[in-house]
Image 1: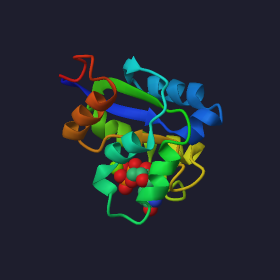
Image 2: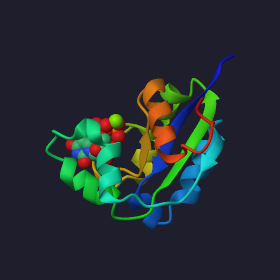
Image 3: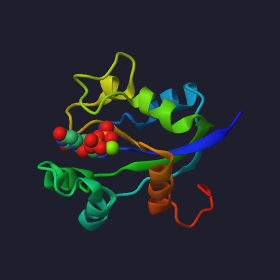
Image 4: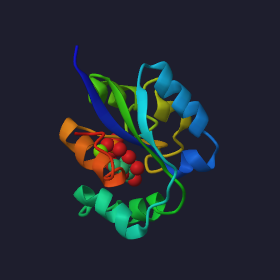
Length: 140
Ligand code: UDP
Ligand code: MG
């Protein structure tokens, strides 16, 4: 049984709405262990760097404004098959398409303000975890 890790952050809409506790409860109830967590806020430059892969997309500037516009809660999570299982738990990017019971179905308000991030690969989980918790050896 291989335990692996993923990276998540609760986005500004969900933190501001007071949904952080409910979201963390769901994450833990599905067997994920929180191994690093903090509350912080990104500068626009940091949000732009984090989402740099989307630089050419039409929604990039709005995404940077939104992600730097309020508090976020980044976390490193541990579980067997963490990356895939966590993407399933958060649901589709657009809450209209997200399956019943997923975090985005429950808490997202739009395709941009969609409550939570989840890394899409082990490689990106390492990069994204290091972005917020570079002082830890957690993802190594
Ligand atoms: N996003 C958006 N409009 C879109 C697609 C994405 O505002 O049409 C935002 C949304 O917050 C999403 C993030 O950009 O979570 C990153 O997009 P991606 O396609 O990587 O979706 P995710 O991996 O978060 O499901
Ligand atoms: Mg993505």
